[in-house]
Length: 236
View 1 (tube, rainbow, N blue to C red):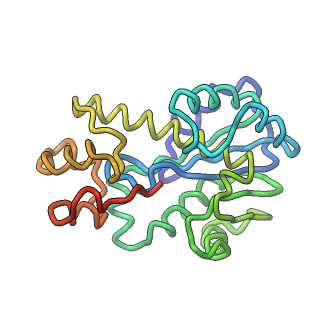
View 2 (view 1 turned 30 degrees about the horizontal axis):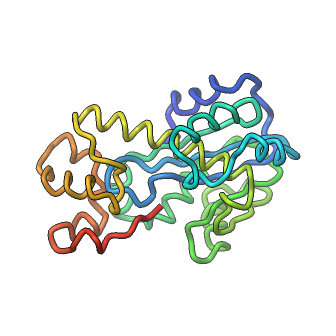
């Protein structure tokens, strides 16, 4: 499966003490608006009726949680949820964006992640302004999902999507830390709202190691020398 390697599928399984037959599923992403690093899609699976348990553990929109809280919750959710992660590298995104919009790519990869999974309902945090259109995009790549609930801010509404959001954010943060170690520099979050990120990219555009992690199709990169830092807005 493109974008989903064996270790990406197996690592979360190791964290789950009781692998469960999925009944409902939720999906969310992390790193959509990053200038550096991958886009990570998290898909969480749990039996119907698990919402209260997931909420009791403390799952909510990952952006409202500290990194340490996300890491702790990811581990605590493992007995209740099974996770699948799709990691799309910057290089793959750059290639795909020559032909597809980011919404289309996200729908494509979510659909790939759901292949072979049997669920009664699938809840998705929609990046599309028209939520029904995002559902249609997913179905065009995987028509076998029986019911898709596509909504804005689903990560705040549905606990199963909150769990997926946490998984995606933790995995993306780990990938960013790996990149920092490889570059031997702390460039911050990788988002355009981060002064350290913007400053580092401006000064290191010719760095061959950095180049493989840059989103070259982002207008942000083209405009770095033309726009002030304050004009950038975080895209989460």
